[in-house]
Amino acid sequence: MRPALKAGLRPLWRDRDTLQVGVDPRRAAALTGLGKAAAIVSLLDGSRDSAEVVRSAAAYGIAPEAANRMLGLLASAGVLDDFPADLHRTLPDYLRARLAPELACAALAYDHGDGGARVIARRRAAFVRVYGAGRVGACTATFLAASGIAWVSCRDTQTAAPGDIAPAGLEAADVGTGRAAGVARAIWRVAPEVRTADDATRVPDLAVLAARPDPVEVAELMRNRVPHLAIRADEAIGVVGPLVEPGRSACLRCVDLSKAARDRAWPVILAQAGCAPAPGVCPPACDTVLAAATAALAAAQALAFLDRAGAQPPVTANGTLEVVLPDWQWRRRSWPPHAACTCGATGAVTGPGWQKRSSTDGE
Ligand SMILES: [Zn+2]
Image (cartoon, rainbow, N blue to C red; front, side, top):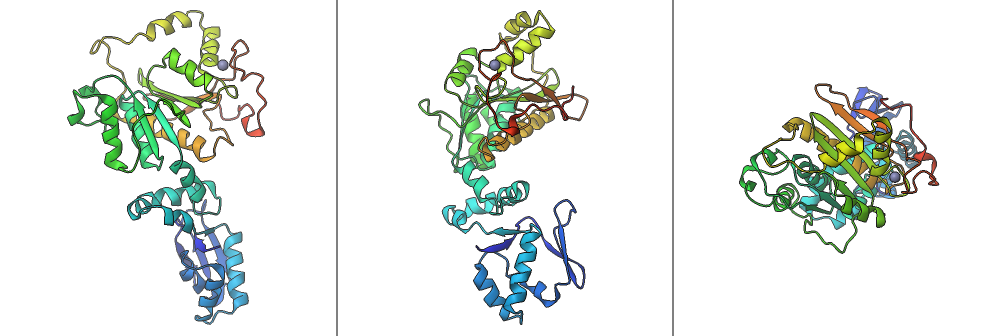
């Protein structure tokens, strides 16, 4: 082990004898009565293994017993990580520097004790395919690439229009060119190492459906058991979810069957809505900020799924997160598997994390 203070937490002094690691009380820990052993924190940058820390501490006049006790206290307080030296060795300098905030955030959010190494390693091995390169899809793709996902491809056959321009997506120079290629360029602006070319022979770890779902593509995803996250922002409403694990959580048809049970005309409405309007006839009611907010939450849900390798379901499994402008609060709607659907989710055997949620639901 190469002990290091968690990268996102700073050592601070509450008084002469009390060390506080971190600022916000929801992350910070305070250790008191440390005496001169507190000086050991200056050695905890991950450049030494535990034995070297103890040896170096002796130069400060800190006895080995006191040094080991100090390391034990910091570990018990949850502010010590095993420095991810192996991961650092595999990353080029520029990428290590760019991903430092991702590592620090993962180390605190997941608390694996590895400095975020496991999470970043998963992202560096992941392939996400985004369907749809409008404002929301393009922004989601760049967020995922910047977060360390190694391969982000985009499928879209449309030509970029002025309304597609977004701060984290397509830019003015992309207008009149293919939107999918514009997304690749947007990704390279923030993450030049990311692979963007699509490969139809490869099954992605996650598909993000940012356009009206094509029934043929959805059927293929279900057949190949590809997890997919549906997102949309239209009619001044942002919707993230459901995240579908085929056969394990409610699918898009489950949701439509539930909606049809509440509104008999829903299938008719859905069929008409599936036909894209002529360009300029009905612009999407999705302003810049709604697009960015929806894309950010979509990327967060995608990462919540990929970072945990599907072991723990994100809140968008069997549900959606929705904001209806001008409201500011995202609310969860529950969409359990539908008994009439043949996707198999109704009778799925799932772990405790996949049990139905109710306490956080918005309805
Ligand atoms: Zn279903």
